[in-house]
Length: 319
View 1 (cartoon, rainbow, N blue to C red):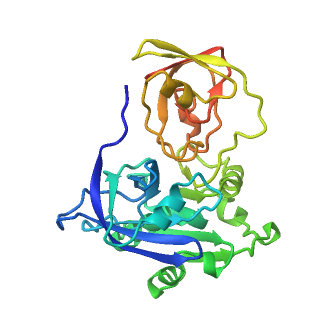
View 2 (cartoon, helix red, strand yellow; view 1 turned 180 degrees about the vertical axis):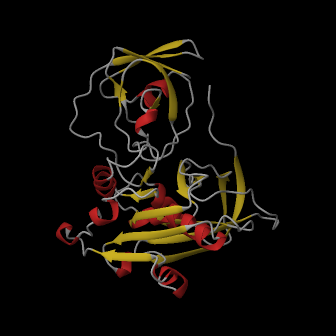
């Protein structure tokens, strides 16, 4: 069986609004000790006041060992986690959080990067930008898309002289007709690694335009719902190899819900196929992948159990 991440108390050193509906939280060790190291693209699992775990990307430079910085969009129509955190936590409070984990890491040998961020998707990308800039690891361009200046987190920092010529911020005013054309950026593969984080529409667009790039050079992490809409669900079973259980998954249930009901715990966060927390080894069977996380080469032996389903009558999972 798998378990939820181990949580540790962290002090909220700062909590403030940095853009419309976006709030920054600075977390530090309560005794002032150095924090566990993290790498660019990493996230924390944070227990928000209503008791659920939510995954938030770290947006500060990994060279900093004294603090973790996250930025959270207050989603009025969300599932309550962001509202609970933004409305319920102030400087001086304590939050329970996991050690950093990275499912969206920079390729260890890459030295040329294209970063593409939409909205709150800037958070892991900003950590990458800060790391590449401060370490001199390579060259990069950042394309950052938002509705308007008021909804653009970190707009002043990214407009600083050290980022001149490296950062392009584009506002579409909420009109798809004003969207930035990324085709000239992605038309010719150039040995560069592309990292994209943002809403589903942006992810789909980048996916469509980068299909001719070499495998393993395009990397995604999404903030937003998965593509599992308007699809007909059918029942199937999952056999859990480690637990020895066979579990029925009803048409109206997810694998994650069915497995939990059987008493097997699986780490999860977004529960809509965009964060990667519930990635599970697929031993056998054919999956219908509905996530926005798995690379093409992973789809034969991995599955996101929060949203994906089965094409075959049964899946065998390493749980």
